[in-house]
Image 1 (cartoon, rainbow, N blue to C red):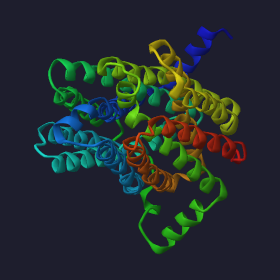
Image 2 (image 1 turned 90 degrees about the vertical axis):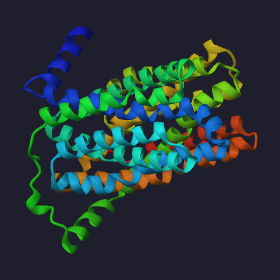
Image 3 (image 1 turned 90 degrees about the horizontal axis):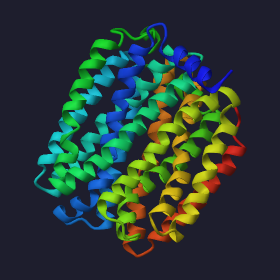
Length: 400
């Protein structure tokens, strides 16, 4: 089968039978949410100037965002098991729209931190519902469906950081966030109209009880899940740390203008638009372990070379190498989703992702402390070392 015919067949399997009307708004909503999150690193230098933040306190702001994105995933998973995915995703997009409105008018650093925490909490309501509805809609093409959805997320991260950089340079940093608010409101309406009114989950078995808690804990304590949670924590630690400071690093350490730095940051996610569908498809075809190792090798090389690279062409190459780690999500989330039974998929995913993401949220603030002491380059070399550990753990991970 030719490449074009293969792509057409894959598209038909994802969009046929009315599935496209579910996939499209879910994917667009995810693109807006993660695009909103990645505006923060672009405007971080402006926030530092306006609110008098050091690199450490700026890192704490990003940690607050990621921590908010983490802590809500367990309760959102429990609620997703009991109620409709539609309600969770609509609530998520409306909450983030309201929170970003507070960010742009925040008069003090304290209110900025509070509004940022609310942005994170709003975002935390979306991922589990997104995964469960796609698991139910695409039982045989979950990796591909998640890969496409996450690629749409990277498309948002490709477009919105550079757009925010331009709007910040021409107008003010507030416009980088402000442009997202009406789009989130439109997507909330689209989700409400397009998604099913009732969940396909059977809520009779999801009543909270001691027996159900014991059942959930026993399922979560399996070796495969514990192993994956550790790997996921280490990856999230690297991913959140790298993304939080990459534009700042390019501007302050590599001498690039803020506009060029934000464009290069957007290019990082632009590569992810290609990587994630391929990674999801690889998961469906060759399994979790081999596909995960493939996408993690590039970042090891890229992070090692980053401190020694100078000039835009070299940094474009480094960015492309590091960007292959963006394919990790399509693989790990597909694997995790398929490990759980239908009656606890949301709760299980929420527990794993909350644990891993909460621990991983410490990365930006710790990296900020290191960077404040003049060890920016050494910090990236340390991230490369952690990535090597992830690769070694992956090689020992059970397939199922």
